[in-house]
Image (cartoon, rainbow, N blue to C red):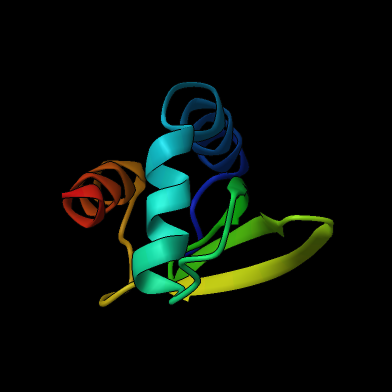
Length: 85
């Protein structure tokens, strides 16, 4: 079941406003892009998250998949926290 649009918008805003360092960490670790200088979450769904990555003058999208299908917004929160650790 897809995450509700309101939950997606809230997660994206919260992660970019309050946890930009975690978003960059996801790209470094799970996206295998240690050269990334900044990252911005642009979307999340039950199977993964879409991140805009910046390395110097270049910007490009990266998709990071989850190890399980998210069931709801609480599962998304728990998964993102676990990934940040």
